[in-house]
Structures are given as structure tokens and as C-alpha cells.
Length: 256
Length: 271
Image (cartoon, rainbow over all chains, first blue to last red; front, side):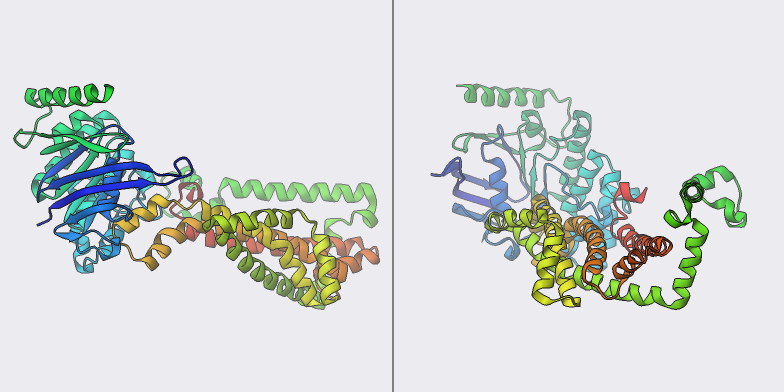
């Protein structure tokens, strides 16, 4: 079981511009069941990424309760569960090869060395980088770097997978094929995923549920359930309909 | 790569001997020859007394090697140079790291490091000699003092440039603190450390000779000064050339190989 339970999560940022503190998250509550794919959707600056930072253990200055698989999230090194994270930028270590970058995550996660090569070859194969294991990141295109970063996240066999606008830096055609790739892998592994995006169509294509965020202060405005079967098809008219509905809600409400 | 391309399908490029040398080497050899010609012409135009020709200079160099003067004085100079370099590098790295990591450290130190950089090295040398006397300790203090601010500045910039996003990545993947330093932080600072070392060595070289001219009783600088007093231009040329050879040797045999090893992943350096 790797469910996520966020209860009354609030976060205040203090800075020179806001000496009294800026309320980034205002009592967010969100429950994600095991094996569920949830998208956090909203414009930038509404605290979506902050939620991921708290869940990953990077940000520990918050109020409220955050549990993953029943355990309270505290210092990242003491996590009883493994987190896979795909950032907006690939965040690969440029001095390591593709293989070295995945090994870095495997070693950090305490995966026994005997399993490394099987896992690395398996995951590189699944993301289509079988022949690129010994290549350095700068020799790869942006899409291939992000594939490496996805392979790295899945290779540690995480309990939960956090994705922070992972395809927003790619061109739309690459992003499309990456979404299909991700869904394919996800159908196989059924990780619990929280996926941050500002793209309504992407959210509808990927998610079981969508939590729409609103800014100032960051809060969840509305939740949508995406009742579409899997595997999903880009051309599905129901997907388009759903996406229009969500887009109307997001733009309408936020413009008011 | 160019040499292989010009040979086409030759199976054993080794067999071709000197023809294997790439074009860049040829151009360098050619420029060296051109320099020798210009040197010889200048010597003929201005007489041997003011511009000793290459052959006389090489003869003087041979004599200096045979007499044992070269190894003796270079040992003195190198010892001073390396010990003050080690001191300057240690102090510079510590200060630079403190300035890069802590805002308060930066506010406290940045002005003084800048001031330290602008004060002429002659001032440090005179002060060091007045404190410690005209001896090796004074010399090493003077050299290290002149050198450490520039090293500190390089390291400071390097530490400031550390990409926090990569550190966050490592933390999310639960990389332990020590491994995070070794595999994520230090590789980011290494290029700056290397630049600091190279820059520092350049300063140390010049200042060491300067210090030896002013207050040495041995070393390359002292011998240069001695040749100057004797108005022996041939020896001045000979010592300068030896000095250049040793500097090039350090660059090509120590610094370059280290750099190639450390940064082989970087496209610009591998090329």
C-alpha cells in the first residue's frame, strides 16, 4: 500500500518581499489511493510544486499532516518509502553517463548491486534508450534526457512517483510520445503518481483524478474524476470533451 | 583524427612515423622555427651583446646544466613555489568556500579579498621581509600572501555556482550526505578549483622570481639578478628559457593530463 493522505497542509514562505510571510498553501487536503494517478492542475504560482516538495521530504517547514503509506513524512533520509521524482528539467548529473545516473539513484535507494544491470537494461529498454547507456547527458536531446530521468525514477521501484511538469519543456510532438510512453509504463507498474501540470488536456489524458488548484493563496478549488478507460487514445472524443470541461472551469473561475 | 582521415584506408597508421603528426603540431613546430629565425636576425642586427643569438644562448644553457647550477637553483625556486602555493591554495579554498556558502561570510570577507587582490605584490614582499627577514620563511609568506586572494575569488565563484537543483535531486533520491558531497557537490566545484590552481600557479611563478630578485641568495630569480649585475645577457636569456621550459612542462605534463582526466565528460575539453 502506498496511499497518500494530505490533511490541512499549509505552507508560509517568508522572504524580503514578504516579511510577514506569503501563504503559499492554505489548508490543502488530498487523498490519493494506492495505484492512483492524480494530476494537480493550475497556473504557475499556486503551490502545486510546493505540495510535491513536501511529499518528497525536501520541504519540511509546513503545518498540517502528510502521510505516505501511513507514515508521516519527515526528514527525507529517514523515509520508510522510496520516492521517484521526475523534475521539470532532467536534472541528470552531467559528469555521469546515462548508466551512471541511474546507478546513482539505485545506490542511493540501497538497491543491491547484483540487481543493477538488469534493472538499468530493463528500464533503458522500456524508455527506448537501450543503446545509450554509456553516453553522457549532453549528447542526448532534451526528450532523451527526460526519458533517462523517467527511467531513473522507475528503476528504484518507488512507492510513490512525483512528477513536476516533466513534459512542459519539450516540444508538443515529443511531449505527446512521452505521455504515451509514461502511460504505457504506468499501466504495467501501477505506481501511485502525483503529476503536476498546467496543461488541461495533459491532465485529462493521464489522470484518474484531477485536483484543480487556484492561486493566492494556493488551494484546491475543485476535483474532477476522469471516467475514461485505459489505455487512452489521443483521438478519443470523450477525452476532448472532458478537456474542454476542465479548461472552461479553470479559465472561467480564475478569470472571475 | 585529421591525420587518420588523410591516410584513408591505411591499416597501420603507426608505420608512417613522423607523417602521423597532426597538422596542429606542424604549425607549432613551424612557428618555433620562425621564432628562431627572427631571433637570429635580431641578434645580427643588434649585436650579441644586446641580443645574444640562439646558438650562444643554447651553449650557455648547456654550460649551466653541466655545472649543476640549473638543478640546484631550480630546486630552491620550486621548493619556495610549491610550499607557498600549497599554503595559498589551502587558505584560498577555505575562505572561498566560506564566502560561497554563507552570506554573512561573504559580507565580511568580499571587500578584503578584493583589497588583497589590488594591493601590489611588492608591498606584501617588503612587509614579509621586514617581519621575517630576507629568508625562505619571508619569501614563502610573501608569495602565499600575494596569491591567495585570487584563489579565494575563484573558489568563491565556484561554490556560489553550485546547482542547488542537483542537490535537491540527490536528496529526493535519498543520497546520503557524504555521497552527496562527493558525487554531486565536488564535481561541480572541480572546474573552478582547477582554474584557481592554474591561475594561482601563474601568480606564484612570477612572484617567486620577483621575491628572489629582491631578497634571495639563491634560486632562479637570484641568478637572473646576478646575470643582470654582470650584464651577462646570454645568461639572462638562458635562465628565462629554462624557466619557460619548466613552466610548459608543468602545464603539459601535470595540469593538462589532470584536466583531461577530470573533465573528459565535457564536450569542449575532449575535442
